[in-house]
Image (tube, rainbow, N blue to C red):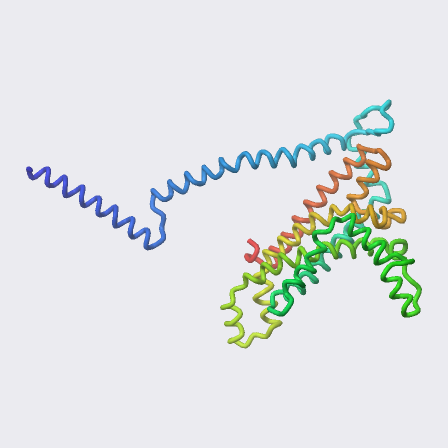
Length: 331
């Protein structure tokens, strides 16, 4: 072997050693090498390709009905008058809705129902989650009892509360009032929106409790112990450790609760029929009244479009406020 060959072999060996050293150093420092980055890029591209069919199916399922609703919102279409056909009306349906005084009553009902239900569910859900985060006898049985309303269908909940609890003749509340010499209260006739709020709150509090309980069980015990050693009280731990830790869970609970409570329909249909008048009608039930009871498909489609716009605006405002209030906790 001549000198040049020995030199080439030595140089190759030195480069191989340097490459191995760089990999070891990168592994120790946690810095990805070029090979790791290429592998990660390939995995990311593969993951995006695998997600693509799901994204397309989701977009088709969710957006085509909305585009259809948006299309019909620009037409006058009374299904009981097929002789008139579909007539293009531009933004006339939206103007008609915004000029109708009952629309603002319905909008106010929707805001009151949604905000009151979310606040009560959040407070009660937090209280129950803190209770069930402790160890005591019968905890599993109590948790099952608390969760059970969440699995009852909305229409069944409406029948249960309207007839068994709040019926002024033979309901449980009427019996309690009569037992103490007071006249029974017909909640469905005098305070129909309150009745709907009770039903919705009863249904959705278990969901809030489950989400917040999952968050409570993920609070690191070391932080709680450290705060106790520093002399923090239970109240200080709750507001300075537990609440910031739960913000992501609160965001998820409020987001899903907002979406589902805005679309409340079955409870209103069974318990109050949206009345008396429009006293317990929310936007979802308003769509039903215009589309099914009045056969005005164009107006109902315009109301549905307004609901989507208001929902997106409310959620955007809510989460911007939460992120502004709690900074990087939710980012």
